Length: 150
Picture 1 (cartoon, rainbow, N blue to C red):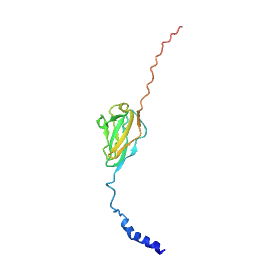
Picture 2 (cartoon, rainbow, N blue to C red):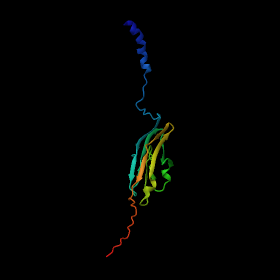
Picture 3 (spheres, helix red, strand yellow):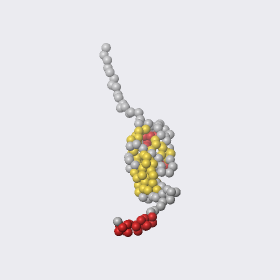
Picture 4 (cartoon, rainbow, N blue to C red):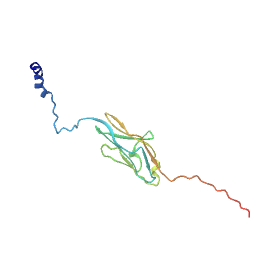
């Protein structure tokens, strides 16, 4: 037992030297994180022709995340579309499309995807299929005249 204490004693003296204390006020401001999508629109989004369209994409990450969208696989810049309002809050790529005529929503139908990027990587939302409902188009029916004999 005395022999065992002889070898353990130096370790007990040095163990306080090996502890690292992190100050309570340290909040990890310099810790970097890759982007993570935290909120997004549902996979299928059906709107009426006159409704505002809101597409949601929010992400966290350090350094700050930059957002971009695609529609049907092509780069889509919501700020450049007429009648579109883009939310500018940090960690948000969400935007709302507001319309100025009765069937504007049909113009924006398609498959959307959000990408959130920083220097550590890119996070990708699921595909969001936007569909605009409208009145059904009935085929024109022609009625043949009926001849009646009396």
